[in-house]
Length: 289
Image 1 (cartoon, rainbow, N blue to C red):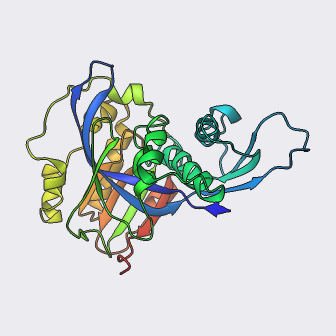
Image 2 (cartoon, one colour; image 1 turned 180 degrees about the horizontal axis):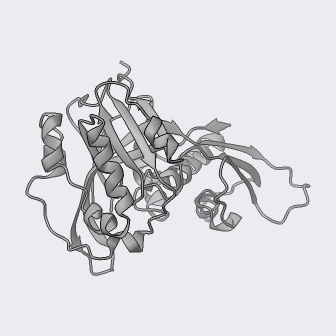
């Protein structure tokens, strides 16, 4: 069985307070993208001479980690603590860049949970899968709930694990072009939080999204940009270039090194490709009825 874990962007991200456990409470809006990895699993014969209960192959990237450190493997191990799972082969093909702020690893883990639940008839409801996913990453629960065929924003609070879907239809991005640009820069979570002073924003990000999109530039803020742009001024330059090229709105996604711009018409990407950046244009589809 095969499935396709999607990427996401953050529409605004505010770090509002430091928690007693050392984590931070945030306010953000997750939006899924029609940019996906591919994940396939097959049951392994009990006679195959392999010690591991989950054999994982990763393709499509040269940024490989040790098998048991991969979130897909960790998802299998987590579910196997409570359910009797067969030994499996898993093949993960990466199209979502790593350390990009687009949730690729979290999505892969969440979709592994969904895939195991479906393929082996575990009978887990969404709430239970979300509870497992929360052990693997703050934004994993979002990918349990999202359906790329019916993309909708979710307002996230807590550490990103408390999710609230937009109750009214929200189609501001439908028909727009999204340009993703990622230079060969990795931003660690620790680095991104360095220098952050938690605070409540003047306007909540979910309220900004109901403003006309031309007002987002001054009101929809990613708090990580101030810190990260100081360390990596190249990222600030890319954001400025997106606006110079006609973006209606541009921002950093999450705490990673991807910048995105939202355009009315398909943007010219030649200058970004000349710099050998990862560059992807996505035409946001209209929601299927």
